[in-house]
Length: 219
Image 1 (cartoon, rainbow, N blue to C red):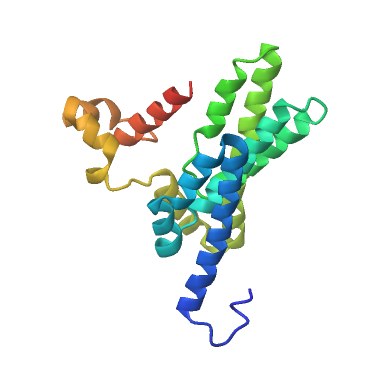
Image 2 (image 1 turned 30 degrees about the vertical axis):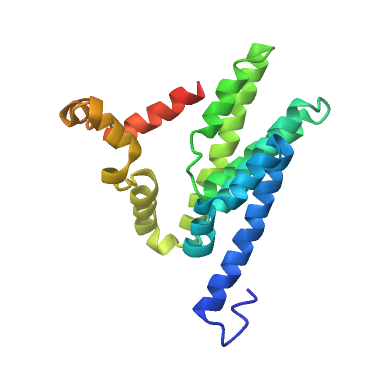
């Protein structure tokens, strides 16, 4: 808003402002790491070259999504140690995790991991219900972001829905440089992956394998 109020604002100034904002966010992430896991992980995060590239050069929003994710995890852990406000902190954690997914959805499976975590606690049925409720809240917030965008452009809603479908749910990265795909190709023939996974209704091929792998890791 401040930049838009300046008539002579250049793209370089805009880039500097974005980098400054992301740098502050990364300091926040480092503080979470320090509080949760200690000094060394915090420093490793701040000094790793990937952060410099994503924040200083590309200026992408990964840091914002990670910040919300850490805040969500912090609130979830706080719910574990505070019986009086446990429900409040858990609900707030789910909402904030939804904001993380809304910013960038690379932690899309994480709510399912939280559900798996609830299976290890007693009373079992109560925690299962909480786990399901946690997932519902998180994904509701996530999909609400799409609903807001569609509502803002009702005259072009078909194009908006198509864009969301193609660029979010059907997005496929450069498989040629993917570490997972390269590793799988060493042991599994490509025709085997195509035969068993290309016919799936939503997620196909290596994407399906990747999602199954993520769910399995959380379990």
